[in-house]
Image (cartoon, rainbow, N blue to C red; front, side):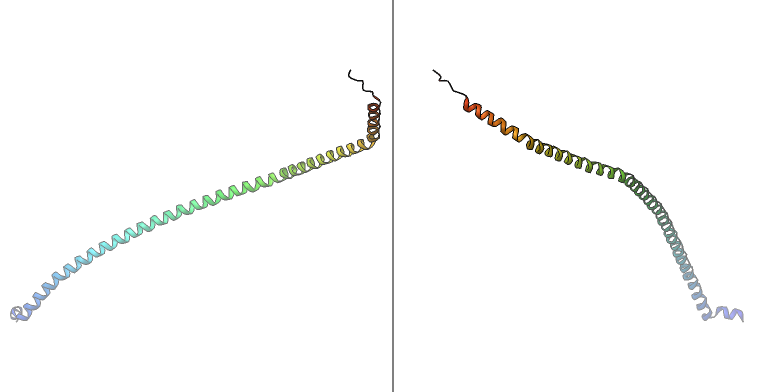
Length: 145
């Protein structure tokens, strides 16, 4: 009975279909294998890119920290310089103010001395002017002939 079933047309058709399916399955398996390899390459490329970005971020973070530290150092130096300069600037300002005040005091003293000298010398000056006036009046002008 087995020999009769093997020759049966239905069985032969099924065998033909199975063989055809087997070829399609191999093609599908190859296509799937190709897609799997392509996906693995894409994943590998993505992983490499992510690693590169991660390294760039770490480098950027280090650079930013270094820049911030540099700014802090410069700011501390500037603040310390200002703290050191404030007393000197104050001393200079006070010295300039005192010098100005002393100059005004000296000019004031000079003006007061001039006024006092004028007050005491006025009678002498007036007496001298009167003497010159009387001498000029008493001088006789000779005729030029």
